[in-house]
Image (cartoon, rainbow, N blue to C red; front, side, top):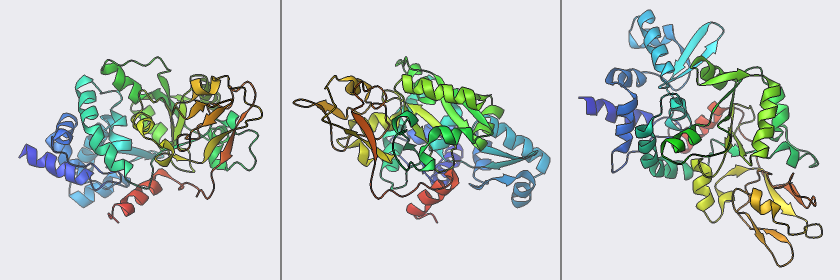
Amino acid sequence: MSDDVYTRLREFMDTLPAGYPATPTGVEIKILKKLYSPEEAELTMKLKDAPEEVPVIADRIGMDASELGQKLEDMALKGLIFRTRDGENRLYQAFQFIVGIYEFQLNNIDKEFAELFEAYLPYIGLSMATKKTRQMRVIPLESSIESTPAVAPYNKVRDLVREQETICVAQCMCRKEQALLGNPCDRPQEICLGFGDFAKYYIDNKMGRQIDVDETLKLLDLAEESALVLTPTNTQKLEAICCCCPCCCPGLKFNKMAKRPADHIQSYYEAKIDADLCSACGTCMDRCQMDAIREGDEVSEIIDGRCIGCGLCVPTCPEDAISMILKPDMEAPLETFMDVGDSLKAERGLI
């Protein structure tokens, strides 16, 4: 019976926006068994993938509201479902595995879970890579586009940060996982940012600590110094920013292996080198996280299809020879992360 519960949970999670594909190895079932008790699996399948108040859920599934509220809160604290708050009211929903349940295991991850995730990553990663809708995008360093005309508001990260009321910082899940696997990273650990509902969830679950705008801006400075790629949710509303490195972040790691990473990463800019100014000093090559710059005969050159528009090469160029240029015919990102989820579901034929 237990196996049947987890098979059904796998099928249910595959109906959520990013999916949860089956594998020949069954590793996806092993992950679910590690995370969910049979009772928690059953209750998860009774939730919707939109937030609902406890009385509404209780009425729909025929359960005492007080008992249900405690169970749902326990599950939210374990990172098995998502919780939002509307004043004093708490709302709960089922949530996809990536981006979602995996990241919510920040306090619980151990070596076994890290190994299971790495074994599952090729399957779920391939499933996500084939979708047109991207959950995350790359946003340029603000210092790299300061002189660029007509920068869209959703690409001005510091302005977006200044608008936020609730912000948290948490340890990078990817670096923590890699450390458990024996691959420690020397880049900053506590540097991934959440805003709004994601921030409240991380703070409530003691996965992150609340910070103010000033500290957030200092962390963005640290990310720039550490050559980290800013990867926010692919939305106009700022909901999260991962500060990524290609040695730990699965998205950057696998896309770096591709011939044309730019074809697989949502980004609005790409770098351009002014041959009249470039001294071929190589500084930009050291900063580039995608190996997108090579030595030319006399100047450095951008390799077609490799630049992902992070802007890390711009502020350290001693000759001011690199600039960020806007890609043509780019549509604005969707408004919210929920909109991204709806787009994924529509693309997968689930709406």
